[in-house]
Image 1 (cartoon, rainbow, N blue to C red):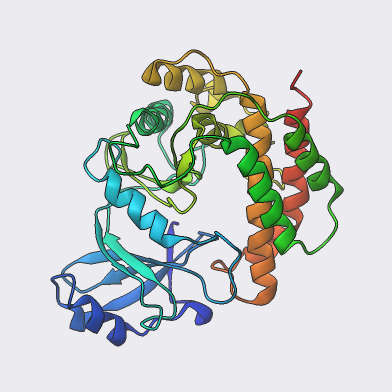
Image 2 (tube, rainbow, N blue to C red):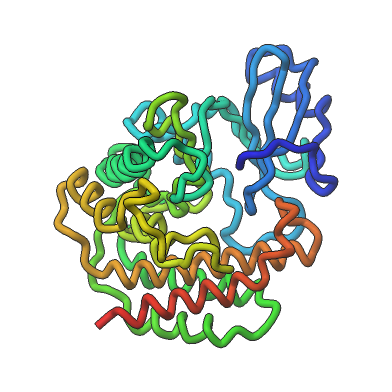
Length: 348
């Protein structure tokens, strides 16, 4: 999320009503509250709250009918509250509100973190000298997350440590079917391949679920991660799912319809790390051997992303998507499924 706009009509919040509620929970001059909406995210509507003396961020569910287990902001709030001051940078949680009558859906408010945004791994807005250090910092942050003891953090009921890959294939197959708007044979073939190639490896860590450079805030003036955002899909799951998802751009062509990819770029000329370099940084930071079954998790990441994009597109057709560009998402679904099949073809 990089652009602030006036609230979209379908996501409008009454500032006076919200301010009266927040005054009871967070110190501040809430009588002067103004609200703008972050544009660019495709899932939970996100807003900048400005009281004149302080800034905050609010996340809420989108309006209208929701798919089962989608947009669970209560889980997003819970995981960030658990991770606060545990070595993985997250915004500080300030208030969770379950009463949907206040602004139309449940919501939570967190501290605003200052910093910079790099939308994708090409990092075009960053100096060439920063790009490799930033990418390596991203991998070290992911490694720190995966090394945390989720049981000690009180997250024993946050997800099931067994059968993660199988459940993910089933879940995203059902999510795709629930928002399907046309027949896409590539999605059917990819789902069938994934179901037939579930790995036996049952490692379990905290899994962010949407870990990528576009979901972090970079510190100003140094190549460090100031905050990891968008924990909506977090659970207890296999660490390679996070790693694979973060590495997807290396398997997508630059300028392709599937999204901002890196395949075909001259990494040295662009000041970018290779996929192998990032995997090595992650493995060194976690102390694990180079991962096996990465192709399965890459294919799963494409399948899941295609299902998510399909959901965004379906919501756009219903008129309640979070982004003005959501109507353009339809053609991406097939392209993502085809990219997943290409990765699957590498698996012996």
